[in-house]
Image (tube, rainbow over all chains, first blue to last red):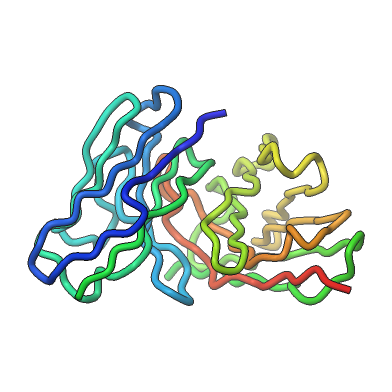
Length: 105
Length: 118
């Protein structure tokens, strides 16, 4: 079973800054299998990125994904207050990481 | 517009059973893998199970130990999750989700809350 870990647990940044979120897998994951989601309080998750770097429909290009093997990254450029949320990575349409909370102040 | 609407949640006693439903619309239901994901109060996302478009393959999280069964009725555009031997640890919001893109859950329902308590 592949276990995903995410870091940091919480990220506090200001509007306009860039957030870099890490997702690390316990074993190598095909780049086709890695996805990222955003979840705001009281809402269902929203797919941001799939296949490591492909943005889902309607996702602004401020969001970008990269990585390979066991190390993957979600980058959010030009942070906006609405980006405050918890971000999860997922592998192969199954297990999720524990999430990274992003606070924009 | 893709819509997924879960129902069937509620309060159930420990050891009890419950069947969740997810009504799908706005897309060709029979053409997509479907999933159940749960989220305990204040916790992260946990993938529960998924089922192939034709129902011919089903996969489950190891942690469920055979207590849950996923199924679908393509004629009714509906997804189901039969849950048994429920415990407090199963208390969560249960979401259904469509695998609209390769290994990505493109659409989600609003979730249905299951509370296991005496």
